[in-house]
Length: 103
Image (cartoon, rainbow, N blue to C red; front, top):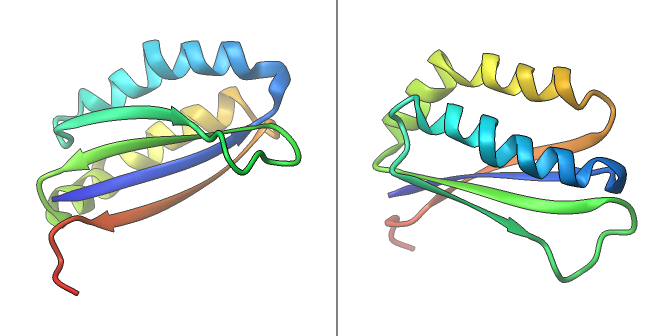
C-alpha cells in the first residue's frame, strides 16, 4: 500500500471556497481517475502555521506503479486546475508514504 499525501497551506480568506471546491470538485476528479482506493482530508491542528491554514489530503493506492500512472496520465492537468483557481494563494508539497516497506 502507498499513500500519496498532498499538504497545502492556503490563505485564510479563501478557506471556505477552497474546502468546498476540494470536496465537491477536485477530490472527486482525482478519485475518478480510478487510481486511488480512498481519500481523506485533514486540517493541521498542531503546530499552528504562522500564516494561513494547512491541510493534508491523503490518497491511498495499491502500489507505486499505480501512482506512477497517475503522475503520468492525470496529475499535470489536475494540479494545473488547482493552480489556476488559487494562483498565489497557496503553497503545496507532496510526499509518498510506503505502508508496507520493511525497515
